[in-house]
Image (cartoon, rainbow, N blue to C red):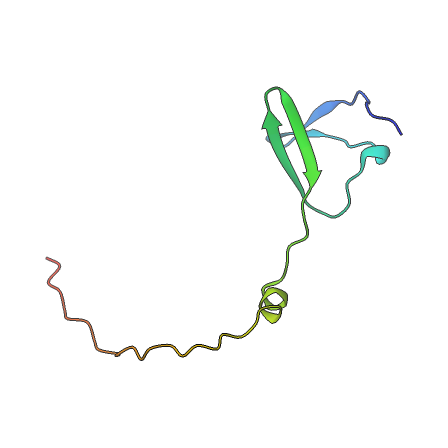
Length: 79
């Protein structure tokens, strides 16, 4: 596998861009980029878990919550 290749930088609107050669393509539709010294490191972003999927994996709580009184707050003079 090829480890290195020279590529061209170009402008895309106000952003600098690079075409990623086919042999370096990343899976997915998002990536994470970070700078370490003069190096730019681009990695595929991990897939995001949907909230419902995350909640479905949690065990229900077996503890009772204390009763919270629903008293109105006192009015404040903000002038």
